[in-house]
Image (cartoon, rainbow, N blue to C red; front, side, top):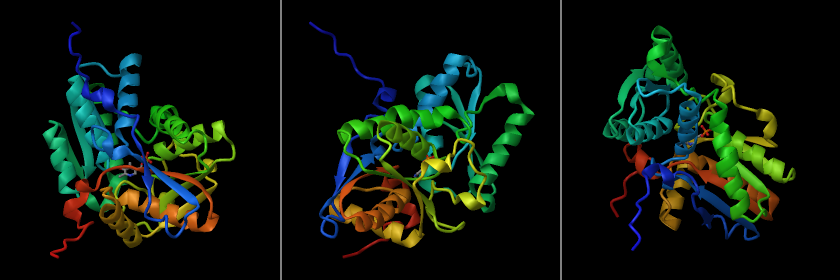
Length: 306
Ligand code: PMP
């Protein structure tokens, strides 16, 4: 008789389903729209992929040893991924995040046993970057900082994972790839892979239209510290999206399709809608970076009594 072999939680990172999205079907019947369901990763977001890759590369290179504390600046999802992976592998994790991240995110990180340091909310994710750099500079041998903004393992996780999966799952028929920019790892890695496989795939990056926005996880590059891994030349087009229409699309997705996704997914789908209207025909793939249950306290879904 064969013994039952259970899987480890980290084995479930990646290989996410490609969902068919139908909310724009009536308006654009000749455009097939799909989305990678990244909220189905065990840590609940796309960031599980690069977090695991950065940690395992550091283990292999000897930069991460069992006595070190994993630390980084994170707007939330990467921190949750580090916290989960740290717990699964037995590392201490200390996260620096802006003081205004959602309650759900703080609680999640805490649930996995990670420690938190809060930076000035007025300084956003850049303030968290400055704070973690100062903390590590004071005691460099105590920490391992993956530095997701400048670590090639970030985009490579999407080159080998997300991008390759999209190609396989669409059987090479993808014509447009759309993704939001945070560290830019998702966009850079997947776009690089898809363009290598077919130089004709059009890649569209998505940013908040303004420096002050409600699209948690996304960066307004013109007014931010630009990530070292960001390569704007990969984008055939770069689209700015307003907060309110992005929230409206996220709500529509939940109510019309039963897919509960976060702010940045709403922004990506807003861009997808504009592109679908313009092209009239094609296969567009985007990324649902995380789930909407992570934002209930932010009022993303409002509250309806009917
Ligand atoms: N959406 C959400 C919700 C995120 O947390 C992030 C990561 N900051 C992104 C999109 C952007 O992903 P990336 O860092 O790969 O650009």
